Image (tube, rainbow, N blue to C red):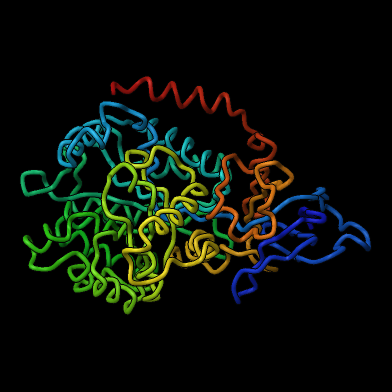
Length: 459
């Protein structure tokens, strides 16, 4: 046995399958990649061989957060005044941003992935899904391979969304031709990645999701073939839906996006969409009926200035909901913990305009844990209980920041917010971040290497 004993935790957020609860003044024992036990005095009869004891006095221990939508490569295109949403119309912004994306090279994709994953881990994220749809021809086809390499370096549990676009700009797409692929090329590379990396075993660290970028920028056959491949190989499906394109889809195909995808079978318990802020209640009900999930990305609302996604309606209709950071082009950070706070506060802001009540703060923590696990089809992550993956993060509550808040750990992050990195993040039973440092890695070198890769690109 090799593991850790977190002794005398002030609070552990546990969930044995019947919803989250807080257990006070307990120990948490891990064994390899899994949680072995949560209870009092677990080391009272001696320490098992290979177990390292850690004093957890004052610690709040949470299940690791699960990021269900991101675009890692956009970390190399952020905090730029010339690409400010507030100064440009959406079409103008797209015309400026996509040519920038098209200049990225293979090293850019690797180092931007390290950058995004590092920030995610620092803020309690233990599983990340990335929607990588940018394949400039000069950058080659091994971009997602490099993302898996980055995940291995940092110890991140990684679900790779192999995206792509097939519709030329001359036919109504917003994608430059140098970023386009044929349907056959896209499907062929999805097959290659599934063969090389997809692991469906318990505690898997690598999975692949077939993820054509968005219906408005691809031919119908791209989505039809994605459904065929995913169902044949038993992997999940993902795409962008309901972020301003639905009426364009109706003009082109006679159907808004949700009905268009439902008709071809790109929907169901093995499918989740990103965003969905412009959807009608009937469309949300259609998704709920088919079991299709939604990854809600709250923070782009600040920059894009569109309507706040109707999470209360989604919740009332029984949709499966997860949370995502989204890419740094519309959210300049990779901090999923901050997204919990943003998601809750934005719903409170517009609550008087909604037919359904805002879910309680603790539900937003659930969206980012059990909700995210559901979207990714994982039954081994998202909650802390014996037999579940030892994915967790720690907040030392003995700080002035938390005076008056410690009575309710479930609501602390969504309602109060956490303004600093975690004190520890553990993934698959391994401590990957603790006391301000990545295990076995030099953050200054990671920073220097990423900056050097960025400097090689003429931006």
